[in-house]
Image (spheres, rainbow, N blue to C red):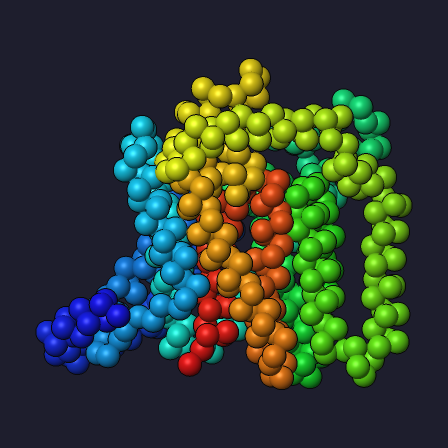
Length: 437
């Protein structure tokens, strides 16, 4: 790899600096807390602050690579898709008619990908840090679950028109909780839950397998709480994502339980499915919210999205090769030329359509290729391995990415930094577990 040859040349001149520097020898002790802090601050602070923490992680990683002897990069096959995607994003930036706005979007993409590379590189040498990272993410999710539950009991008011109540009775209106993620929005919180609930489910299974039943019980209870609060967000895309996560978790767990506990497994699974269905049917606001998914044009939110999809697809057709450039500000400026009157939008409400509009069809193909190849390798690992601990660790990012891919069919909160930081960390964990030396 050409980059590693360059690094070897640089290391000839930086070895002595490294040997005489206490800070350079302990950069990993700085990088790891910064990674954890990035998750924590994403719960409370705005996008700029989250970005600064991610940048710090990347800069310290660059210093580590430049000054640590024998340090090198390794590129897996699936990451070639990501490299190709990034190159096409660069082309899209160069061809954008609103270069200054597209540059802002490009810089965000660069920060996220740099954070991904940094976490991959850190975990390559410190796989023992995977568990603390997952526990930190689970802690952030648990905090949001408690905040969301308290907001539900407090009957918080909507900050903006988050649901169509024109045809609903007062008892059919759900109190949509939004947590502390900025900007305050229940769909953002719902997307965050879809991305992170697999950590709680995975830690429940992990500690149960380790026979630490108290910890397992705690994470099991938090898993149930987080699923309940996800429904309280009223985010229908998150409902779809959670359904995919639970079904996928059920199918994966067949490998462990089917042969020895077939009857018990069927009984428990049927009981859980039955109770879930009963809860949805019994709680009127939740039932109405779920059924509105299938209302098509009869629901104003659905109708709004259909209009945005139509306009965004027209944007894509007119810019299908290299797109319009990155970023929601860039999107909004150009969208104004295509939108149906009265249906302004910040995004395409579909991460695949958004990617195609911003960077073109070939960038979309490479991005989807990256996700699919990573998931396929993860699923193959799950099916082949006999190491239950590693299987559980791999299941967490697989479920997280799967749920997010389906949620992304109807929303674009995926591009918010709170979700991006977790998403790329999940990809890094999966990479370091499936492709470990």
